[in-house]
Image 1: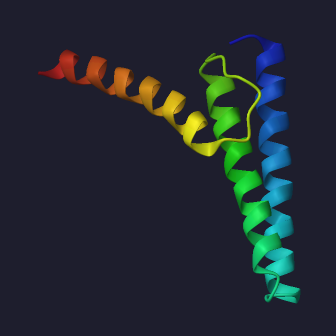
Image 2 (image 1 turned 45 degrees about the vertical axis):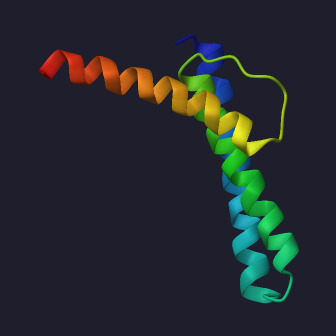
Length: 89
């Protein structure tokens, strides 16, 4: 992985941590704001997935669609698992 990609991965993780931190703070101080808490949780998950995809050098379209991002990630994980299984069995 290139150094610039590693920087991008770290930026995605930092932004995701901020979204998750915001969700936690809102939950602690204004727990009735379910929609806002859910929004920040969704944003955190999206950014963590994008960090993983970037780390694995997988290109993805600019999107906020979690099913799309998870599909791309799961294909890579499935291929990796198949390769690993073939090595041992």
